[in-house]
Image (cartoon, rainbow, N blue to C red; front, side, top):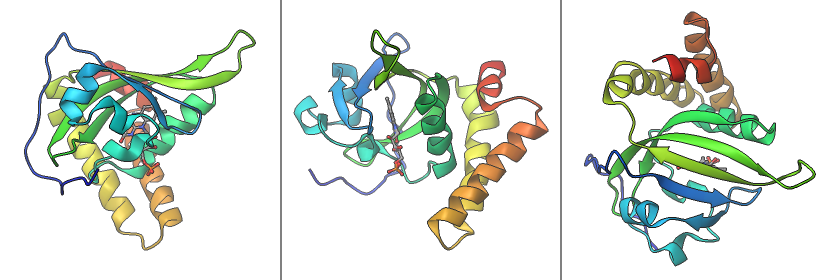
Length: 173
Ligand SMILES: Cc1cc2nc3c(=O)[nH]c(=O)nc-3n(C[C@H](O)[C@H](O)[C@H](O)COP(=O)(O)O)c2cc1C
């Protein structure tokens, strides 16, 4: 299941498509719909059991995923813009809504993500420059722990400068 190196080619999906996946508590994929498989370029059997980071793009800051995990492990939902990597190296942007799945006793038993086409204006005006800045802050550090701290600070500084949370920011853009 070798993955190609990232290309600069963007892939697109339709405005009425929803890319769906479900994971277990560790973020291993338990389900991916056909639209997910089509845009990412994998068969479902290649995805199930794999960590969701199988489609992680190197342009994505670590701090965004930390925020995502901190939020959903706390039992809350999050909306996030994510640049993903297809098997052939192409990339595609999504606007993801990630939620915990609860059992009858309110225990988290897994996670669910629905993704739609992102708004291009929001990507170009806010998200792409923001993520580039956060990634730059992370790459300026030599070890992973410092990189995550620097990225988280850069993300918080940006959000703070707008006086809103990341979630509110994403909603208000
Ligand atoms: C339901 C769910 C959906 C996710 N969707 C994506 C995704 O589309 N792309 C992605 O790179 N990471 C996604 N993640 C986050 C990954 O689990 C992982 O944290 C991320 O790819 C960063 O990889 P790393 O933690 O190994 O650095 C998702 C996690 C969950 C729980």
